Length: 152
Image 1 (cartoon, rainbow, N blue to C red):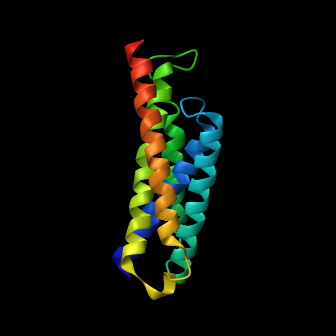
Image 2: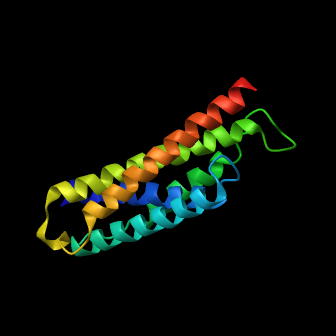
Image 3: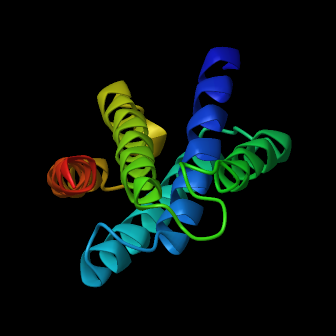
């Protein structure tokens, strides 16, 4: 169970950072889409915790704290503006959210593909489908935000 425990804890840490990032992102994704993304990411984090519990994997609080600290440290990156928020921050944040979401999607797919009997009552196929849909929305927003900001 060693590799699986490490894998799941790495993904739990990233999921925690994604929820934090989605909760503070200021622009780019529409408010409604961002609210939906945060709710879905939070639900996926809960699903991951449920899977870990069923598999006997204990959450590594140190990894979660490190990931959340890393997400918060990313806020300090100036992105070309010292006294006010830089428009480049929007690009960096939506790209980060898209990457964390993709990482989360990979974990959901892996859990689904394991076909582990202890996970049978978790609706992993539906979670994967929702995550794939969100990934498409975030990619469209990432592209639009980057073009709008970098062309301007």
